[in-house]
Amino acid sequence: MAEPIRSKRPDVTAPTPQNTPASNAPISSHAQQPGVASIMEEDMDRAAAASIFAQNPKLVQMIQGRLGSLIGRSSGYIESLPTPVRRRVAGLKGIQKDHSKLEAEFQEEVLQLEKKYFAKFTPLYEKRSDIINGKVEPTEDEVKAGDDEEQLLGAEGAPSESAPKQPDMAENVPGIPEFWLSAMKNQMTLAEMITDRDEAALKHLVDVRMEYLDKPGFRLLFEFGTNEFFSNKIITKTYFYQTESGYGGDFIYDHAEGDKIEWFPGKDLTVRVESKKQRNKTTKQTRIVKKTVPTESFFNFFSPPKAPTDDEDEADEDDDMASDIEERLELDYQLGEDIKEKLIPRAVDWFTGEALAFEEIDDEDLEAGDFEDVEDDDEDDMSEDHDEEDESDEDDDSGKPKQEAAECKQS
Image 1: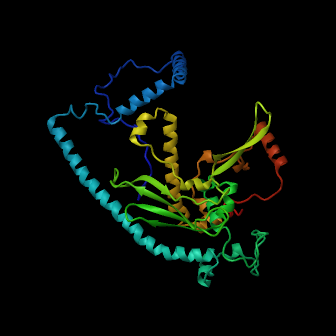
Image 2: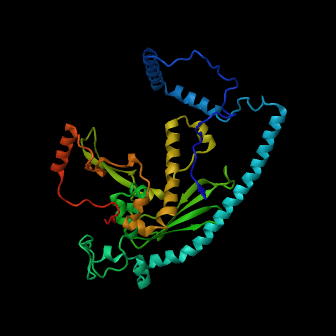
Image 3: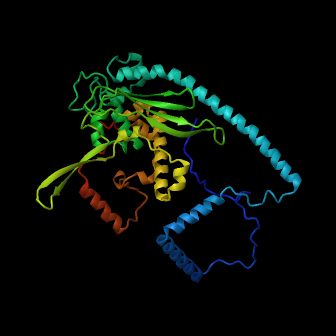
């Protein structure tokens, strides 16, 4: 099983022999709750400290570095224990090592079990690909097993009014057009990466699959049909894990490598061309200068960020830059895991949008437009502000039916 990237500086949440002060603070029986004056003084002290830190970023970095160096350092508690007690602690650590060995064996067996069942899944993925790309039609038994006729079909077998046919799609269209693009646009983390320009290329996505490496790791394969953007038929991205297991025997992510995309001239979706007009100071003649600059694109996924080396860590004094690289590495790893664990196994559920019902969504990911007012019969005492908001909502109501979250997002 894969283990997500961990922060280099673990959070300290509870006193342990590694962070407990060498001498306990005395407990005073005269302790009192702070009064109003002391709270105000504390707020003023915090504001003054925040002002000092804001004006001295180097001071903040120095303090963070000192605190980071203290984490994991012995407080002297273990050393102060009697010899027999320290001997018992050493014995427990020996038992823990045996436990860690068993955990490593467990994770290795889990990986082998995953590979065993992945071999059983593969024929199903191949059949899915054949249906999506119009090579075969599903059997009657397969259709019956997955079809809810009351929901998808009318009484006489015609499409129901609640599911109108796509206007520009022919009745005899082969396969399922734009299957993978629609599935990816319904997966939140992937949808955020896909630009309007990317969609023109992702419409040619034929299949998304994965394979395990001989050593811990996996490879994602994106197969494309002939298109106007690049010559690659298959673009891969490989995730590698460290040779040594982490705490608990889990595999630890190391780095990722992506294929080079062979873009056709002028079709590189990861860059854009900026035009700038320049005027000659002497002749007053003008010219247009074009410059290529990087831009957001899903295809940047195949150029993963690289973790800085130890030498670069020491030389780099910009803490914000290091934090940004760490966040990008974490996001890149999570995207790979989402494709491997979510998109590929349940692609049809992402295509229809049904998988959204099982996705955990943070409040910060939701926009104001995602919410609507709900009438509550038990709430009789409505304030004037609520009444005004209700009237505003009625004025803005266009009368159009709201789109359900589980609806397929066709472009």
